[in-house]
Length: 419
Image: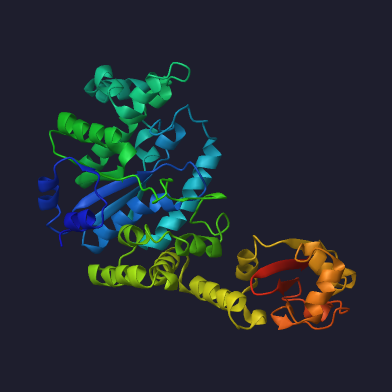
């Protein structure tokens, strides 16, 4: 398929300025396109994966994607999709965020993909040059008609500053610069970026007499109507320090049956036949969750690597199967038990008997109930059945010298940390 046809099949085209011309232009390998990312956080999140993976799809189709870091636009703040003014970030924070995001982009794309920073061609521009060379190509009437601006102007209690009102011009300058220097003809982005992207295409036409195109992706929502990419803890980040690989994997593996095929199309590189087979599995044997497990594995390998997936599967086997708990990766195991009740002690010598630990963890209502559970063989210490109700764990029981895992029944876990 032509790359534009593939995006359409995957449900990734919401608006395109001239689909016939865009399809024809990208029928020839080596074409250039870009997408911009403002460094508003120290990490990209899975909502950013839609445009990121679209760039990667173009690359695999033989084209030349550009990842643009918003070193300049990030200093201003995009009003798109925001109901109030952004808080301006310190420049040091912006630069630190860019450095971290560059690393994430490098892991996804490799070293042969161009990453640029719009601060490089914006910082030397004077106010007079900006107004004469770019401002004259935009009418206030036209800018006020853009949805991102109109939505704020109509809210008298919020309004929009001249700073954020000017954001559209800065983004348009980026498109013009990349067109003039790299023959970049297409900018892609989320559906809320349509006004900014088309403003850039119009600037290319007015200032350079050229032709450029816009393509946006639909806003992803779940079958329940919620915005895609949010969890109880907030955004799902690509940075393992903000969202552990375990949490990342679990987000995908817990996808609703009604959403999983759409997510496979949007986020993976599986072909039609593979996705069709997983769709059949989801319909005929949903309890196996084969489609979700494949989705989670594909995404986690892409972002964190196969080694992390292996650790996650090993920890899953330990918690829900019969794997060796002492061989499990400690960080992954602790992340897997992050939602479990936990207690901490200063040293192994302070550890009480098992019934007291069960009560402290809330796994038993009373010490008497806990003793009965241990005596009946329903309690496990580090996945080993504990039959002695007076046994107090010691240093030799500690996993990796730091913690114990208690389980009552099949699924009730507790984490004891020492030191």
